[in-house]
Length: 133
Ligand code: HEM
Image (cartoon, rainbow, N blue to C red; front, side, top):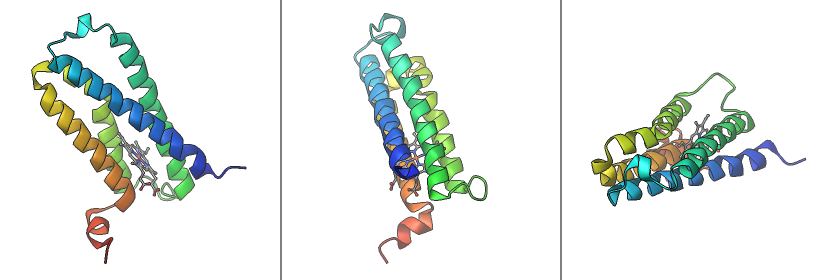
């Protein structure tokens, strides 16, 4: 049987890439002057974004179990990732509400994704600084 990690890691990543593709697509649509209600891909983006967020969560929870990260509750780095997941989950609302800030949203959401990835890898800022020592 495949180890749990090998199953949940790709699920986590499918979710991550699809989610951020949707965010990019919404940002560029709004940056080009598009309005939410006129977006021909609105439904497609909404469904894909929603389903892929679910993939991130299912994959993340599975990875927690696989790595033993959930052994004593939710560690700080997971709480941070949950917070980022929540903000990323509200991205369509945020982008469509302030479409004139699309360029900024584009960069901010990319940075949030990078932060979530770094958090998983290094667990803490100390872990990051000490990694190469
Ligand atoms: C937008 C949100 C998220 C992004 C962009 C993200 C990104 C990543 C990335 C890039 C990795 C691979 C790190 C590596 O292998 O070095 C990872 C691993 C992981 N993520 Fe996420 N993640 C997100 C949300 C979550 C959530 C909500 C949870 C928990 C429910 C979670 C739990 C985990 C766990 C447990 C790992 C495995 C860490 C390890 O191998 O030690 N992630 N994530």
